[in-house]
Image: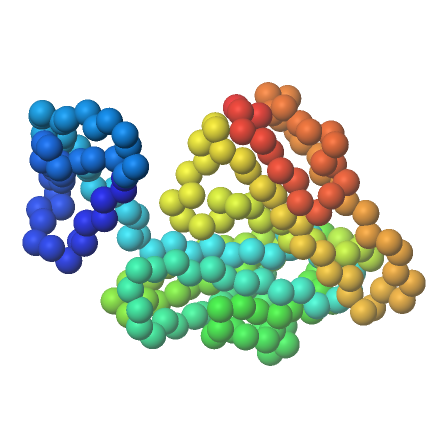
Length: 225
C-alpha cells in the first residue's frame, strides 16, 4: 500500500510527517482469514530535501582538430522561470587579447550555445570559453570550458556522464554511464570508420574490458571506489 499526500495541505514541512493507519480498518482483498489489527500503525515520513540551487554547466569537446566547426552547449537548471540572459566570453591561456575577427565569427554569443570554427584557434593553445548567465533575480551564474586545437584531423568528441544533472549523487550501488558523442567535420575528405576506445588511469576502479570499444561505457554498481 502506498499512501499519497498532497503537499497543498497546510503541513509543517520542516518537521516529520506522521501517517497513522487506524486499527481494525485494514483487510486484505480476497483473504480467507483476516487477522485483526488491534494497534494503530504509524509511519514517520521525513520531507525529502530538494536542491533548488541553480546550476550551470557546459558540454562540448575539450580537443578539436585542425579544421571543422564545433559546438559548446550550456545546461541551465533552475526551479524558477523567467527571462534569462546569456553572455559568452573567450580568453587565451597566454593572456593575449582575442582578435575581434574571432569574436565576429563566433555564432551565438548571447544564446545558450556557441558555434566556433576550429581554424580560428591557435594550435596547441588553450582557449577558455566563459559563460555568464543572468537569472530573473539578477543573480549571476558562471561556467567555463577549455578547448585546445591539435595539429591533425580527427573526429570531434564530446563526453558527458549520467550525473550531469544537479543532485544526481552517485552511490556505490548505482550504475554510472559515460556517453561519447562524435562528429566528423566536412573538411575531412577521406573519412575512415570511427572506432571507440575507453581508457582508465585509476587502478582502484574495476574496469570492464568488454565495454572498451563502445560509444557508451557503463560502470556497474560497486566497481567505483
